[in-house]
Amino acid sequence: MFSETYRSINQPVAPSPALVAETLARTRRYSRSLPRRVTLIAAVLAVFLATPALAARTNPGYQLLYAISPAAAQFFQPVRMRCTDSGVTMEVQSVRVEGNTAQAYVSLTGEIVDATCDLYDSWDFHLPFDQTGTCEQVDYEAATHTATFLCTTQAMDGSPIPQGGKMTFSVQEILSGKEVVEDLAVDLDLTDYAADAAFTCDFGQPEDFDVYDRTGGSGAAYDRYGEASPVLSPQSEPLAVPVEGILITAAGYADGLFHIQAELKNKLETDNHCWLWLEDTAGNRLECLYSTAFCSGGEQRQDYDEYVFDISPSDLENYTLHGYFCTSSGRTAGHWSVTFPLENT
Amino acid sequence: MLSPNTADAVRRYGPMVYRMAYAQTRSRQDADDIFQEVFLRYHRSAPAFASEAHQKAWLLRVTANCSKSLVLSPWRRRAAPLEDVYAYTDPEESAVDAALARMPAKYLSVIHLFYYEGYDTEEIGRILGRRPSTVRSQLTRARQKLKELLKEEI
Image (tube, rainbow over all chains, first blue to last red; front, side, top):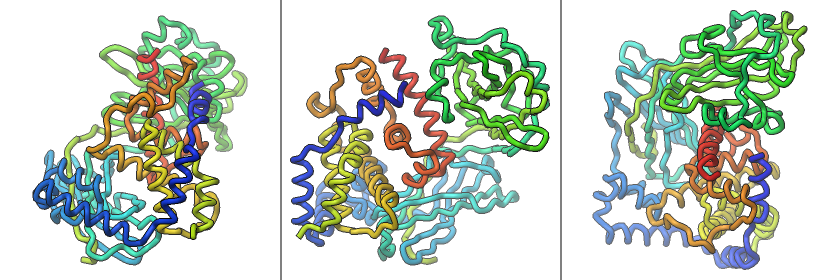
């Protein structure tokens, strides 16, 4: 099991006694002027490396400065309130600073921008101090295809946001055309699949391992069952199509557990995903023991999620299949970056 | 005079911080640097914590940030010398270690917090400042990538 191996390889990893002693000695020697000296040295170094303004205007130069000293890098980074790439314009609308929190409203405008656009975990904040941050969409204007995001950052140590600093907000990918169905009853009679599934793909068999590749799993029992358990062989004709882009491709019993399989069309580009559960007539949910993900090999990659339930065949008639489904039309790659002063506007 | 809180934190959470740093950098020398940086920041800012869980989360968060900065640093050595990494005699451990060394850095913190520290995705989201759904998808992608790499290693 991966989790056991991971624990065992990390168990011996520990700081040496010499490192601990040296660290404690350094805290004794610490003086409050040290960070300023480091910043000053970094700034002077930046002057010798290149013209700071020039260095900060190129991405490698900026990254170099940021690695030396975030404060110096942000100081030299020019203010840029607007940026366009791949037909999408990013623009800073307003900034508010109060205590240890800074907030900025940043808009994205372009044909691909819609009410559901998702920054796909590609956004980043650069600030001259340790911070925690969040970014969430707060508004959408359909007439102009403009989505507004609220970027919030807080100083890690709770101290006030320093005066005169600058913040850089950047995004690399935008997912759009997203559709979410929170709870959909799938039109599938579970009793039709109360028998053992005719075909299963056994990851223990080398021939199946070449055809399908397990890509992960989740759930409390995944470590116990998941890695070794078989999955159903996907059927060429879907059993049901709950939403466009996600199909139910197999159902039935394997090793005494009830499996339901969903195919996620073009998952790598669309981030299509779902979560399936069973529900009785009173609305009580039966969650799966675990879920496992796998994909077909070869050029025509297809991704599947399989949900495994501990339910007897005779109980299936009391349940219906329900799911949460999320699909999108695709993602757009680019480099959007704005830098703005941390002061109220 | 050394703050008793810092000494106490080093004693109690030093191994946790060091493991997190090593998990992200795969280098003892880098982990040494991060370890010192984290506890110097701890000493400098002397933050007040509501609970031990809060204190642990703060240290893990700062460790993740320091590691991320170091990994992105253009000055960082791209190849670690043999004496800079832990070696494993067990073939399975060795294969997992080699696969982790080739994993994209962004997944390593999530893997470590989930598989070693035992946090769930909600807690990892709070520690790393990411949405739980983001953590879940990163964990899924990390497992997928790990699977591919382990196939290559085996």
